Image (cartoon, rainbow, N blue to C red):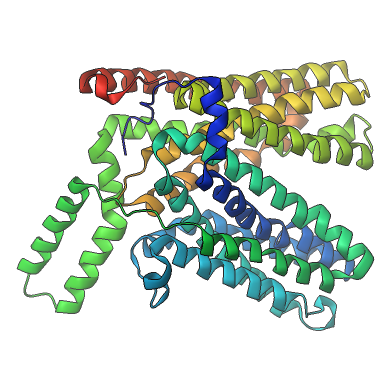
Length: 465
């Protein structure tokens, strides 16, 4: 894959929209559903079940640490990238075998949870099964991300990301509102049994989709071969230690070296800084939106209807628009549009906070702008991260990139309440809007560098946005 991140020619709008009809894009929709299904079932939905069962809030809060699994998946991503699963690898291939393993783990975990009663001495087992579901889900994510990148060419990554987000959002609604609805009428055991059955969507999709053709970068192979030759020359080391060292260097060290070898130290650091700062604005403001709505006097039902219902639809619309923008204009322009949209949406929140009126139409307007912008930005960022991976280390590098983009925003989220207390909501939303500017500046330098490299490679490289 190209290291520039964007060297695709512009398409017509018709071609950009018709790209959603590609069979692998449809497969990505169902894989996105499979990836999103477990998330709520080990977070907010599980919290509701535990609280209704009389479990203390402190215990419920500690169980939320299960979510750390998603943030550290890069630790075992090299194993998913390299290790061939016995029998399954021959039957399904590298990516689909790991997908199926993760999906079966999710289904087994959810089905076993459905037979337990947290308030009747089963809490520790429920926690252990939630950990199994989260670990299986994160493992599935690693394999799904790798399949998405390898299954189509780079100019299709925008629509693949949009299809993924659409399926993911639908799954979030099924696993939250759908599970709560079933639990209200038939109990939590029935709800989790139904969710375990929904895991069959991912399993069926994995069995039906094709395995992508493995692609290996010659430069990466040469780099690994040099390491192996050096280890072989060190005969004083035991054979098992040389073999383990060769595997570790190839699976863990080489993905880092490959990224900086392809891009150079300066550009590589700039790319990582951009990745870490691109979603700062919406991550930082997002944690304070619900308190903001409540402080303006909106009821829980109004928030649920506008923010959680209508807002989800607008996010899906934004993801669809984002995929079309990437296909039509390329990754860099889509990233810029998403970034500017998020900044404008934050400023709209600042104006809404300054006016301070209890207006459902005003709430719907600012939420629409924010969620559409986040959908565009999220889709464009996924396409960008996908374009940076090497064919030799797809799963490992993407797991690292996806962890890097979320970490800075999560760190800043913790201080959001202090900022609101100190300056109030209007200035807080202005502050979050300003957090989006550094990424926009870095994006300009990255796009300029991509244009220069495309020009140096000649007309065959395409035209970066």
